[in-house]
Structure formats: C-alpha cells, structure tokens
Length: 396
Ligand SMILES: *Cc1c(COP(=O)(O)O)cnc(C)c1O
Image (cartoon, rainbow, N blue to C red):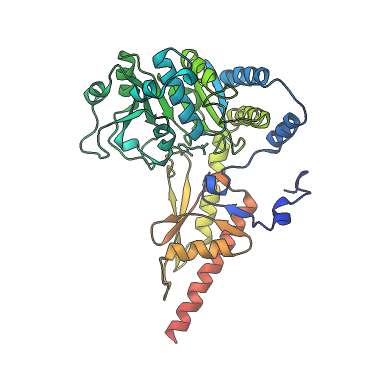
C-alpha cells in the first residue's frame, strides 16, 4: 500500500546506500522529515518549467505570509542560513544601506546580543557575520538573566537580539530572560528580536505566536516537522524587517547569493506549510500516544525491557516519545544503549535512533509510520530474546 509512483526507481538501491527507519525524530543526519506525495509532486511540477524567480518568490512569500498569519515571509535554504541572512539584514538595517555596500569596519562595529544559555552549534551562522556577539546572563537556574542585564548590553551598535525559543523540557539551558521581557526591553531601544525556532513546530501556532508576541522575525527549518524540502527554511516577520531580509537574501548579489534557493524548494516549502497548517494535529498526537501505549503493552511484564513515555520530547515539542530501556545484558564492552543502537542499525531493516542515557534508546513517533513501528517492536523483541539466551548461557 505504501508503494507509490516515483518509488518505481529505487535510487538508494542503485547506489547501494542503505535505507534506514528513522526512530529518532527530525534529525537532519538522516534526512529530517519526509515530504508528502503532494509536496513532491509540487516540486516536480516546479522543476519542469522556467519562471522569473523574483515573480515566484513574490507570490509564494505573499501566500506564506497569509497562511502563517504574518506580515511577510521568505523561503531560505535552511534555518541555519536564515540565521545568517537575518543577521546580515539587521546589520544593513543599522546602517540604512544595502549589506553588500558595507565595509568590514562597518560590519565589525555591529553587535548582536545573545544569552549565554542559548549558545549552541548553530550560532556559527551568526559568528560568521563578522559582528561582535555580546553575551548576557549565565546558563543556570539560580541566577536568571534580568531585564537590566539586557538593557546594559544594548548599545548604539546593537543590531539585534537573537533568542532561541524552546519551552521547558527542551535541550536549551535555563537562565535566559523570558521571551516577553526580552521583547519588551529590546523594543524600548528599537532593537529587533530575531528568534531561532528551527525545530519549534509543533505546536503549529508557533508559526504566528512568536512574531505575534513581538519578535521582528522568526526562523523555522523547512526540513524538520514542517515536512518541506530538506534544504529549505522559513523566515516570517514584520514587513519593515522582512524588507531588509528580502533585499539581502538570494537572488540579490552579495552574501545572499551564496544561499541559493531553487524554485523547487520555494514551491515545495509553500506546499508543505499549507498542508502543515491544515493538518489534524490532535489526531496525530493521539496516534503517537496509541503507538507508544502499544509498544509498552508489547513488553509489559518483560524482565529485561521496559517502555517509558516522555513528554514533552527533547525539542520541547508537545509530542510524546518513548524511551525503551534494557536490563540484563552481560559482558558488553560499552554501554547498553550503544549496543542496542548497533543492533538497531545493523539489522534489516536498519533502524536509526539515539541514546537515552546509558541503558535506553529514544523511539520518537514523529517520523514513523505504522509498519515501521511494527519493525521496531519486532527488533526490540529480538534483542530481548538475545538477552534471555545469553543470560541462560551464563547461568549454565
Ligand atoms: C535544526 C536547527 C537549526 C538548523 O536548521 P536547518 O534547517 O537544518 O538549517 C538551527 N537552529 C536550531 C535550534 C535547530 O534545531
């Protein structure tokens, strides 16, 4: 039933590249999410003809703004790229000139304020801008950043405050000033707040709520749960800031020219966001709950396998996921989770997941289909049997 047109040609088989079941969630390392057949068809349709790119961008960006209830929208080739492009736009805004016309000295004068608690590997995209990153606060829970800390960090050279939006339960550290106060304080000084919410849908409402609370721009990854093309990203925001983004980004010459977005991605992301907003998110969450409950039932009473429901997930999204924990192994050289991940990866079909501590692995329903859940349940059952057999050998 899952056989579809377009799957007639199996490129991965031709290349000898193993397909994997993605039980980890929207991890870019295994291709994030899967596009719908409708979105794939939209991309194929876009690829077949030439259009004037600016015309296409204008139309798609208008539609995306309406769908996401924002004044303006822009399609980039990823959320990381959107961090860089919005930063370049903020620099251009500070000088009131096109980004490409600025000297290195003018750029070097600019400052971006960022919470220490928010520092993460994606902020290379900001470091590369050539501006000064001004850090505030500490990543801990006993000494949270205050509005005064932010005020003291803002100078005439501040071009933006970057904020990583993740609800409690997600992997970002505590200690940052809360979002509402960040926006209020920055607004007092006319400094735009740009939010990295790359993996912050679901909830779908974040597409409009974050800018609704006063962010000048908010960034989402198109290749994560939005289920657009892997190499796509979405920026939404207020018209004034987004005009700068548009003037800085592709196909404008300058830094934006490096971040080419094809007409396939532009159309693909539009199609995906349209579907995402129309999707029955409650039904999807119920499905995830049912699948986790079924996984739990399958190993109830097992001596060596237990299933734990976690909520929210590691990205702080309001979606349940499961941790499957194993006991009773003997003679492993590494951790139990490393062994299980290897058994997942080496089997047929190959299953990709990530460790949850030393004795467990995550099973995230977000990127799974029913048949794949069944394959995972079966593999966990096989590993359970292996533990029992080894245990019996040891006893003899
Ligand atoms: C995934 C992620 C990004 C990068 O998104 P891409 O679309 O893959 O470029 C940036 N920031 C955060 C917080 C992310 O989780």
